[in-house]
Length: 353
Ligand code: NAD
Image (spheres, rainbow, N blue to C red):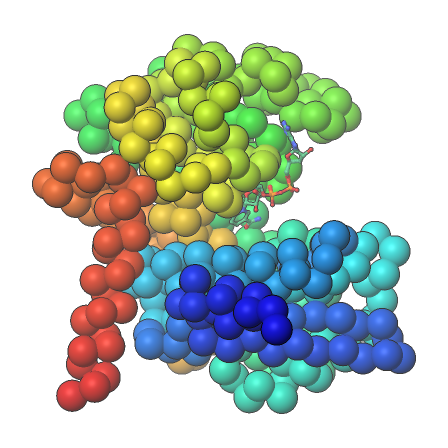
């Protein structure tokens, strides 16, 4: 007998995985609940063409665990969860499939709160919400999370600048932004307003042309962007960009961007430290969109001022992580984990009293 399922759950200390199928719509989905110590599990719905069911389940559990850490570090009373839908979002994401998924999530009765992720959009959330009361972002409330995520990353940058140079001022600082999608584009706009000197790169030449026509930026090739001698390298495209082959090529002072899972492996956090590069842990600085969206669940409904204040708080959270790393002589990546783990342990201890 293969021990894959329980080994996977144990390896990530995860709670449950729900496997959902609906023949009529072709839905094949998995909902991973990692930890609910702090509150109901919340996380995005990712739709992707997975190579195997095993790969999909691994992704769901790994991403749910990351959400546990993200919420805990952000100070939210939420646990970690994630839904993965197996299929090509371009050709297989139908209304029937989304409605069917909405009914599955509804049946969990609030154990899992869902939002958008890779392969799903805010319009999809509106549709799911017709079947389910536990869909967090909607176009008429929090809307697209990209600009809020960008604002959070900017706050993370300011905290890193404060720690490195003794001033959080972005004016005159050089920033290389890799990927100018929903988040990257908004980061470039905000950097420009703050007077930073920005270089961009994207594999989509149309997007680069469009942005370069409307804002004052320098354009670099996708291969060169992370090798530039800048104050801040800002990865906003892919994960695992900090790896064995790239790490020696970095010439930045700070790494701070929105991309998930930027470190290929945990040890790369220590390697950055050894190279004297300050790393802003990804799930600390990219929590803005998530924090913004869950504001719609607060009493009285979505309030944009309160949501913005919650996103701005990423400055303090990032500084707390950097301070902890310095005090404990550990990498910033480890400090972020420690911060989250301490909060969960404290909640566990008080829950068991
Ligand atoms: P997006 O798909 O809108 O944009 C990604 C951009 O990266 C695209 O323009 C794409 O062409 C470009 N790209 C892909 N490969 C590239 C490469 N090798 N070099 C340069 N550019 C490349 O995605 P997004 O919503 O802007 O998110 C960006 C990253 O931030 C993702 O890793 C996402 O998981 C993460 N993130 C996003 C949010 C959010 O609120 N949207 C929240 C948390 C984390």
